[in-house]
Image (cartoon, rainbow, N blue to C red; front, side):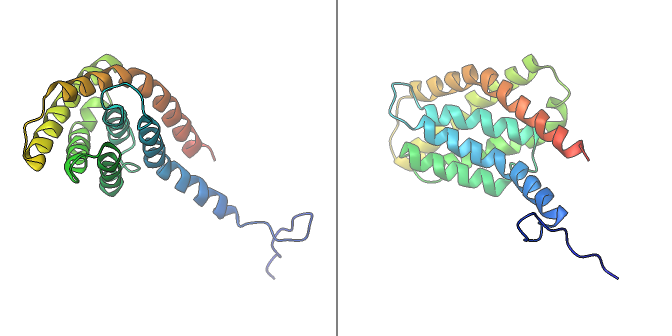
Length: 185
């Protein structure tokens, strides 16, 4: 004879034990994309910084691509790149290509980077950020059919390099909490 489902005090059946686990697993997978999009939208507020949206997107996408690649998959990166293009009024597709390229580089060097010290990862990110900024500038030049100054792109790369330690500190704590929750019974 099957046991009846557990009842709550007000008479409704309790949710299946697997439902909460599925919601928790979905939240862990969705958090990197949603948090990155939220930070990008916050960075789009009118302030006097050079391209803060670009500078906010690079560290987040790189961190999650290296340390939690199953949550930062190419479709998510594509949508983040599209959001970046819309927020910065850049030619559509330039942010998508830059973030997808950065994601690919992060995945390619993932096994090397996860075993390195923070300083090594930061220096590698700085090289990737400068490369991404130059690629972004080149795409904007090509798609906009004009040659804009490169200084704003390099300023955005330097801003991303400066933001990386603070962002990585917060994201590392969140990543460790996620790992702890996955291991807990």
